[in-house]
Image 1 (cartoon, rainbow, N blue to C red):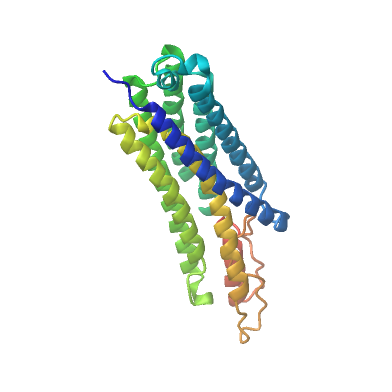
Image 2: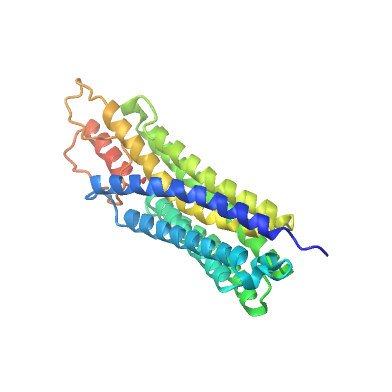
Length: 315
């Protein structure tokens, strides 16, 4: 039986990973600028998440470089017929480290999405628990596949493929569910305050969530399709997915911040209301809430106060 073209797949995967990592570097610098400008208003989860994901992406990219150098330049490996392919198919220390970084990165990303869903839905614990159960199933199957590789030293066994398929399927269901839940809640929020703004104030933020979610969901769908087809490319493509899992939160922060800037520039204060609206329509990066308006407010001020309290929870 001929050996699979693991060397070509590895080079292609490393090249695509480097491209996505370069994009993440640019987005990370923009995110740092945004966080420094909005430092007092940004929830601590946001900068911690950015630093963590970018650190994981950097470490994974370095491991990928060292693995490629070993596979294609080490004399002890390339002197053996098909030595590079055999090395790439073995569960080496670098390969296992890269797999562990992948599990950590996707787990942190999904926890961040659960936190956003929890805040947007006014701290709905039942919804958060359901998503946590889905994520627990996904991470359990991923860790089980990693443990099987460690135990039997076989990367491409039937057990590993079965566990990987299950993990990818659960990840796909989780990502679609969380993205849809956040987008729907934002749409309802915009609809509830549309009588004050004459349009859906959260349209730009909804598009940002859907676009970023679609990028990551598409990568999971590709991984699932390749894995179910039994192709080795499904395993090799995980290296690229690590970088996409980093790209998603960074791109989301940049997109939301851009929509906030546009909202600040284009919002007009109605002169006939006699009320002062302090940036009432925006998606803040904080988790603070205010659900007890003063009883002496008139009806118009109640609506504005409720709207400002709600938008503080949607990011």
